[in-house]
Amino acid sequence: MTYPSVAAAIRAAMLTAQPAAKAMAARSVRRDWAAGRLTFAFDVTMPEAPARPARPELLPPNAMPKRGRGGSERGRIALLHALAHIEFVAIDLALDAAGRFGRERGAQFVTDWLDVAADEAMHFSLLARRLLTLGSNYGALPAHDGLWDAARETAHDLAARLAVVPMVLEARGLDVTPVTIERFMAAGDLRSARILERILTDEIRHVRCGTTYFLALCDERGESPPALWGTLVARHFRGAVKPPFNDSARRAAGLSYELMTGVV
Image 1: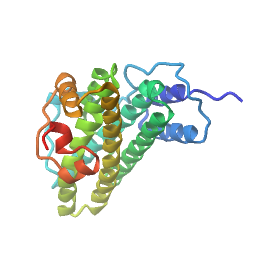
Image 2: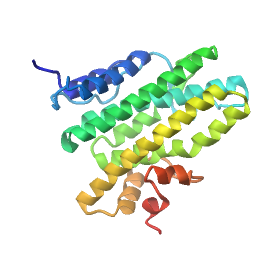
Image 3: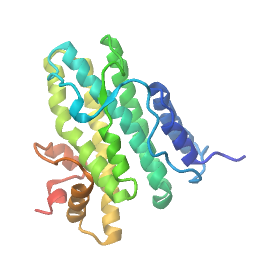
Image 4: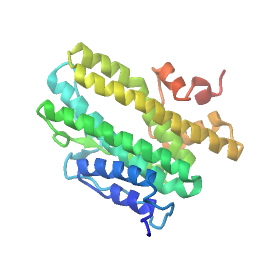
């Protein structure tokens, strides 16, 4: 029996636009790969951009309306919607990593990033369902596509992708999520807080996965991790990496201050 390639399955998931269907497709790719129903073959290229639904409307980051701090129900809905969009885009970021760089890094790399994609799909589904219980839905508010800009910018180099996506963008989630959890708890929204606690736990593992592969690449290239990370972030990240940092979560993810700066 001839099985389809893992690259073809990943590409099909990335080109699925409807949000719930994309989440299901990502989890299906992971199950099929784990069960041996996909071959380790890269006979198709990854799309330059994944399919997106008609909603939410995508705006430039500087055109996004200001969100509240999450105290009111309206503010909490806006915050949950923004987080759902981040998780939705993160599905494609993880899929793209597996499909774009899997040939060079091997089957375990594919497994690891398909696991991340399945986690992101679960996170998105939890947040989308929570929006529904609050009388809203994913797509009801505008969002921006800045996260995918990072994928375009780093499509040529795995080290750059790892330096920017898990080690900057996802790591920032480790910094801000605990404060967000506290805001939801203070507002009495314990259900949303529990969802974010689950997401935070998983994201520590995701950042650790990216950091581990980045360190392996540095070792192979004979590069200093802090020096290479700093160079790649300066070259490919349009923003600043600034405190406050969640030092305990970052250390759990292998992304210590020493690794980022080279200072012991």
